[in-house]
Length: 327
Image (cartoon, rainbow, N blue to C red):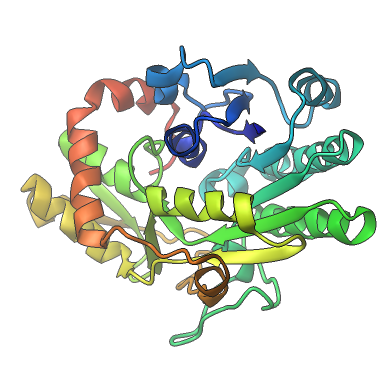
């Protein structure tokens, strides 16, 4: 199968390409990425000579470039990771998020329809549901209630993707995952930001009171779930992906401090950002019951391995720091 992975030079996309090429050597992966600030081909250095892998630079909102890839590689399936994904940046520049996260998805869907692809997987986020109440979990049928420009563009793209199933019978499935962590995450997100700040003897800035709570899913578990949806997911269906390993931002930072043996005085609390939801919590019974997926990596194990990865890969993250714009 010829699989087009858009945004494959980013955090989850690069991990997914590695996962695919280890799981099924009959697949050919075409990585289509614009290489904006968070796209990094160093994430894929180890497979750049693999005959089952090819990189093409391009913007998913560029119709001619997208159609050339579909036509030239006889694409059978699409997994769309391409997106602007940092909430802070969406608050500063919503237009860039509309361009990539909505307009670009529209171009991809139109090309998938035109070239009769067999499967289209749209990668979304649990943030489209908005903030949960304590003890509340959103199922896939819950109303969408996004809070930020980022989550609003992702919710809009989900609806557009589902419309292509309903209107044109395009085989579309959507995944909405909890917060991912692991190697190759751009160092503006919470965990790599705190680890790299700690290693540079900088302060560890936390928004608000640090009590925002998230479910933390290891990127490898998410990749396994996405692969299951690609291979076995039903058309027109949404699949939540969760680990049910909830931690506050304070707990995350305190764990990093312990592993790096830093003083707690390095923590600094900053003014909260707008639209900072308190809790994301989703029910993922559907993917577990239908597709047999389960997360395998316990948070403490995955977190320790992730921190160690950033400690051991300073040559990977240090050149990226000039592009980090938050905190």
